Length: 152
Image (tube, rainbow, N blue to C red):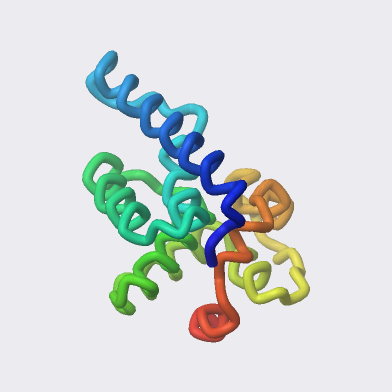
């Protein structure tokens, strides 16, 4: 899915800002203090911009720089989509499982199913169904019907 041309320039500017902030942190501190979550939005932003090679490059960088990061559910879900579109189904399945384990409600939300909250302890607010309300709809809309059927 490609965004309208009017949105493409703003997506590229946002990607550039996020990458600049991360590079600046690395330069200043020798590592990352990414409280803003720039590392999590880059993959989905690349996909929104229709740049699969950019998304895959981002995820390779993420894996190298943040190999022990527990992750963000939407970042992992977009990672799964990028791998699927890139032809690596085994990696796509792995990332899909990770997304589901980050938030048990993300796959039902992706598939448009009714979300029923489990009667379990949620370790943090990003594991609750209400967390999904903060994810832009466009990020879920990246998935085609065929890709959603694969994820089901």
